[in-house]
Amino acid sequence: MLDNWRASGADPGAQRVGIIRTCLVTDDPERDWPPLRDAERYRMRIYSSLSDAAGAGGRATFDDPERITQRVIVGDVDHCATELISFIREFGLTDVVTWGSAPGFPPDAMMPSMVRFTRDVVPLVRAAIEQP
Image (cartoon, rainbow, N blue to C red; front, side):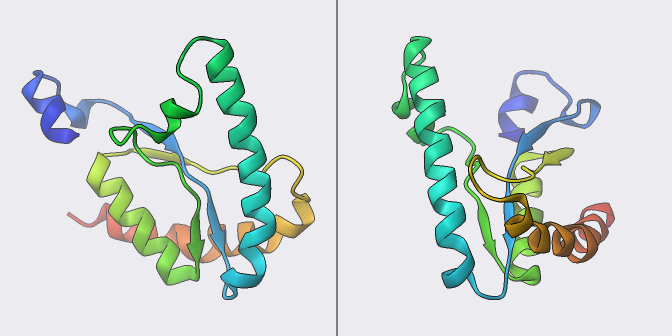
């Protein structure tokens, strides 16, 4: 992606580039992921129907292999940090926004992950990205 920007004459370093990417920080993905996965599938059905109604391609839009993934990163602190660092570097991102909670997924169920994300994952990502 960065090479495409440079080839078009753009300076990636002069722009802020962001995307939404959710992380579920957990030491037990098999227990914690299925209920969030169901909520994310619900979100995708809604977004696909809106995309289809707008004439933008429906579900196929989200399955386009050229599209930057926004799938949930699920794992422990180190896994989530490693995946985010790689993702940020690969696409030259300056901003990553995370969802608070998926539709129908109780905020209290997401809170432990959000606390671990801000307390443990974010500092690791920042330290790695800020290194020259």
